[in-house]
Length: 409
Image (cartoon, rainbow, N blue to C red; front, side):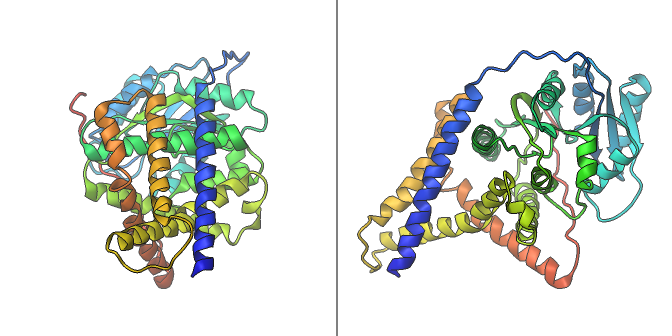
């Protein structure tokens, strides 16, 4: 028992130190001023937007696409994936008026999901680069320019990845917590890892790639529910860099109801479990910069969850006065420090994003006890679903996130 405790505590402190260093690196990267870059010639860019029953948000998205500034050729392709609402009608009205907007009907096929739709869009369009936005996105007008500048000015860049902001952050406590989580993720996993290891992670939206690079990688994996994470690892294993551009921003909706949130995150986590299994069969996923991504997946979806569960159990048993094995190190400090580091990351992200308010700080202080603990239940749910799909040999189905009407629109 003592040996197990020593191993757990050693890993715990290594993890704390790693995330603390990553936070500092993220802060330093975010404080860097953007370089004033002008290209002699701008490559062509195709914007690909998968859309399935997006009538409630698609007009705002199309308006945002028309506001995009880009000196080169920029075409927006709306990929209609079997919509049964008024999505097609709205897009076609825009396409008949604005030459930048194009309507493409995606033929039926399987498996369902974003990857198949994007593969089709890439097969019927042409451009030097392509950029993906989700159908509820409202990017800043310079977001595409900033990504292209980073991709063209960074050696060995296969593309570039921007930031994702929450447009409905103030709707309720859940959306506030999701927004804060995104701020922390982009501070640590994006800015921090780019500063330390020169490796970025595709975010699924507001991401730019060279068409030739994706062709080299073999296109999107149609069985990957977390297509962005899966493609990140493959591209990195091929030696391509993905610079992080924090001043390229897009705004998107996040789930406003807990049921929708659980379904969305179950899909995300299931997709990452698929990638975790895939990494154990691919030695190339553990070489060079790819090692950072694969190790991150093992730490997040295997070791971290065990550590979180262990710390919770130990804390509860101490509170209940259960007679536990004696150990020299104060194990309650083990739980307390995880809370301190977690909360420090949240506050750091708020300061950098300019979102620090008394109410947001209060939300940040309780997130470890509430929002973070949901992760355990979600991972259990995702693990069971993934194992069941493997046992029954059934392809897991894509679950679309429900949209909400923007009252301000």
